Length: 346
Image (cartoon, rainbow, N blue to C red):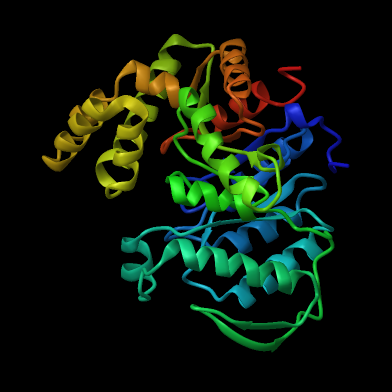
């Protein structure tokens, strides 16, 4: 049984930018609020700021029921043995509330920040999860693979959960098939509501390889959200959302540009990227069309946001993970948490 006692159809997660914007006290207050109103999980990202596991440890010590999830840590900067030990430690500390979110990240981060080659992300992810699963089971790990060779590694402090959930952040077809094959959950970002059914078919291909159904994989996309009853404040939230989308499309390499292009927004994505390259951030944000915004975000008053979230669920999403654009004020975060709480939309 889920620790917060919320039916699966109502499960909702929360992700906060832990690298900046929020102090420790604010992060704790946000997590406590989400815990009190029934959110399923708190997802901590990891980039160039604080590491995910330390933040989640703080949250674990200040909450009762909400699950603690890495969203995400990459499969290059730590060995699978270290990841297995760390997530097991978090699971023990939180009395069985840990979730491991993994992803390959990208070449800029892996090579530029961590100084290791960005090679074979798909094969490495598969091998990484295989080792972690075995280590978390308490079995001895003797592994002779392409990327890792290990002998006689055994964890003496296994996690509380018999099967600790592992989610993969993926969008490309091969990565989606791998997610369906080996993961408990799928953690995409900027997921177009109109593409959910098609992408789940790619998940299903992988799930079938391991004798599973696609329903065995929790679909848990990050959804940028902003709630307000004030027209002026909503206009501000819309500006933040457009600017955040433009940053990903124009300033984060080719991955998100290609993802939006595949989703039917190739013209808009090119306009965003071209404006970004000239340094015109405002023009880049303005190139984000209304249809783009509506397909991947939740924006409006409390009822409108609940209705939009329901549409995402009807499209095939199991557990949306609420997140916020850069620059969102603390009161807007709390207001949105309240508006989208499980009982609010019941």
